[in-house]
Amino acid sequence: MSAAPDLVTLQRWFAHVMTHPGSVEDGVRSSQTTGGGVTEPAQAARIVRPNARMTALQRIGVYHYAYRARLTECIAEDYPALRYALGASAFEVLCREYIERFPSKGPTLEAYAQHLAALCAERGNAFAEDLARLEWAVVSVIHAPDPAPLTLDALATLDPREFARCKLIAKPSLQLLALRYPVNAFYHAFHHEDVPAIPVAEPVSVLVQRQGSTVYRRELSPVAAKLLQSLLDGMPIAAALAAEGGDDPKAVSAWFREWVGDGLFTSLAAAD
Image 1 (cartoon, rainbow, N blue to C red):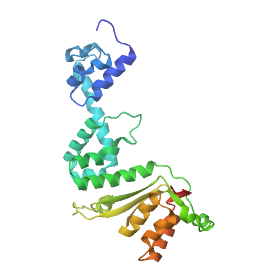
Image 2 (cartoon, one colour):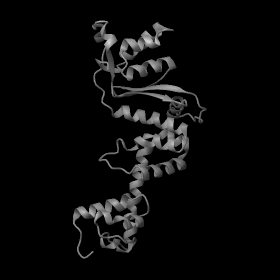
Image 3 (tube, rainbow, N blue to C red):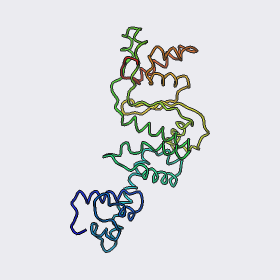
Image 4 (cartoon, rainbow, N blue to C red):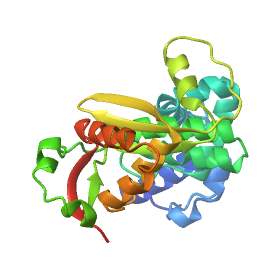
């Protein structure tokens, strides 16, 4: 490099090397696409000066390590129960693979760890996948908007015919999960300083919602979960209630009133 590169070129070069999934040396060798002009490890001192204690590559390595350490901390903050379930060492291996597969590209880390359940699924660990789905649902509803809810009083003013042609719009800070393992009980035990063991498979549906600043998790019966999912999918209200109300219409009516009273929905819209 005959002349010092401009600041933008320096920044691109350093960011490429620092975030490279391999070693610092590999990052330098693959940096030609950034326009830095330094593509051999021996040339790194042209950009980063060595000192009495560290070479240029070692100094860059501090940032190379810190980048992954911060992302790992970020993932661990979102998935503490999964970290416990897998063990610290195995969780760190999972994080390293995640960071390589999903490098940080956004201006914040708020949604960075959203694909961890998918990675667990690729690894064939169904329990870890379900636990990650639950933990990410909690994170998601914390950050989701929480608009004013639709009230029972507002529904009471509707013409009954509207229930046949209208659907409910769920609030963004709500998720309904169909899970293969009872991870909600595991999650609860973990956060109450118990020492839970990995459970055997047992299907469970969990409603995760936020009211104000508080996140609630509630397990639903199969019939209740099916009804709520129908409403979330946009089925007309009357059709959804009728489909699941044959055996116990009083229970269906009670669930519906409870969900509306708890603020799960924000408005009505014409059904498709």
